View 1: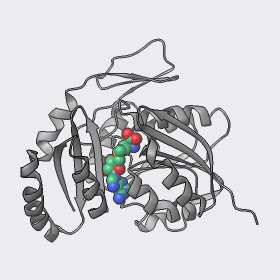
View 2: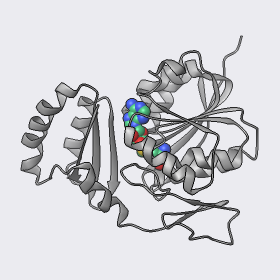
View 3: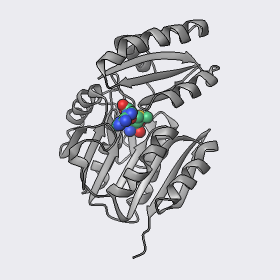
View 4: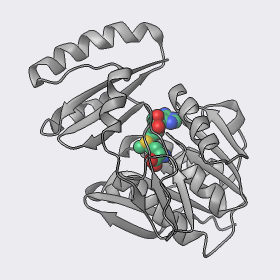
Length: 277
Ligand SMILES: C[S@@+](CC[C@H](N)C(=O)[O-])C[C@H]1O[C@@H](n2cnc3c(N)ncnc32)[C@H](O)[C@@H]1O
């Protein structure tokens, strides 16, 4: 599998929508005036033809194809820390906040998830809210990136936790962060969605997923199959104006909307799976 990483100016949103239609496994993250885009190509042979196509498409838009290594320092420029109700999350090791119950140190390397992005922050808020209301026993963080949400779940629950990502770089980043935070007891699984055989017949009572609209829609059936009845599904990574698409699609799979929260243009939704026998 190869990851093709590049950036594109935020004003080219038509081009970005065309990528969303074309590629199944894609991550797009806004940062300043750029979108940072990762396309995952599962077949090695696709890589060289795609890179040619992308060069054709991107050069007129004055974007550059940059390597994974080039991407890391750009992400790392922003050293902000993030504070939620219970957590202080910093990229600088040992930068502690005495005011917060928990401190996390997250380095990003080439993976996504420091908590600064609205989509992650909304999920952190939702997790903090939910753990006050109920216990969870089997949790999945699908598309874990740096591992941030799995670590939050580890601090706040006694659940068995699986953190999963398609990106092999995420595995490396996840374990570094796990160690940095003296955490253990989280199982990491490299997987494209739920395709890994270890997910077959595996049921969770909590799934958190911070990914873009198309991926979330594609996952609707798998979320249904892998979530217990009355289980909770937390969705993020979608825009406010996309929430109805998600709600309509997910209602076909017995998901009822419990709560939605917004930050800037981003939306995060809490669903409960309700099947009446
Ligand atoms: C927006 S990031 C979320 C990171 C972190 N969970 C957070 O909330 O900040 C999305 C993550 O999903 C991963 N991803 C993209 N396509 C995937 C797929 N088909 N299966 C599993 N993970 C995928 C990316 O590698 C990336 O780490």
